[in-house]
Image (cartoon, rainbow, N blue to C red; front, top):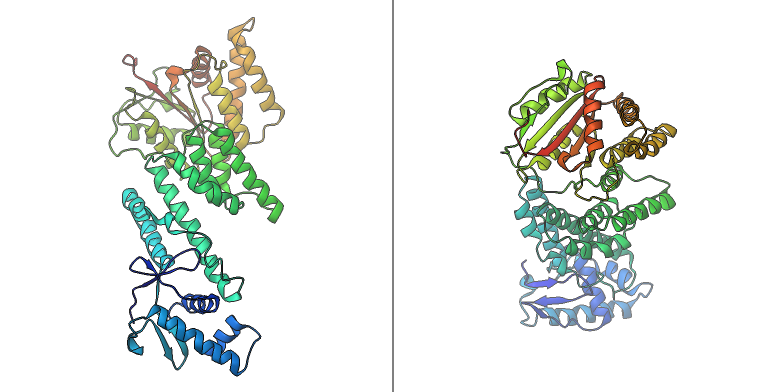
Length: 448
């Protein structure tokens, strides 16, 4: 039993060929809604009377039902097809309505997009969702009133809207689409679903891409507060991970994936790493695999990833982070900055604060971050740097006691002289610990 009728999402609206069908007054509209949510299955006359007319019963109610169904049939079947081919039919089980719906089409497209996303087809997933969010024209069945038989369908439509928004936001972020559009799409939904962690994460990432770090962190804080107030729960690891990422000024996890072929060279600086950790030059992945094995065995290992600007060093480093994270490593990330106003030792200050989020350090961490600022102008700079290096090495080793730790310093060429000196001191003298230090730098001259 086919039908060219379509029920639109939002206030009850039935269309045929893009034109609205006038279904009549309030009673016919309620009957239409009740039959539509049955999904083509018969609804008995008794159920229709109870669900639409309520406590009213008797011959008058049955007659009213018959009149309403007749008017509805004339509206949706003006050609007066034979009963077997009409969209609205009477059966031994009651009444059944064959009607398509936006909700069913959106669900099919969402499932297709999710399948494509899992398969890595970002463009296909994104294309499957284009225009879907404009399908919603308001709250589903909002003029029908509160009925127990509508609760499930309204909830399904709401969950579907959230699911589509998640998929569309993720594919848009991964494809590098306009973050402003994503913010507009998600802001209202996050307000309506203040404990929905994934929506909050996607909105925070979009805000972060707009350089709105405070707003991004505010969204995540609000989610945490609502979870605690309503359920006494803390947010899951994804919310916490994004918070740490924003505080550390790291690239977001939905950034474009690293390409299969990449040309930067991985170099372990000569003389900078103790003998067992010298893994040499060669293909980056082979070098990093050997370095990770040496670090996992308990010897601090440093790898310098050198290449021309824009060749993919940072993307490659992110791929290494993802790979090691999946194998139980923990990671912290900091970057050099072109800002001349950045404080001395900025990359290290950022790193130790992140380590403090992984491993409680208390006063030791506070003393370290306070003391780091004094390294730029001490009476005995070398001695002070040595003391700070020892503290940082100790902190990193303690953080790696239960699982190996990857420390990434991106864009070494933009770090200050004190940070570079500290790296050299740490690499030479702190030779123990399940630590892998990965450093990226632009190639200005062949490394020696």
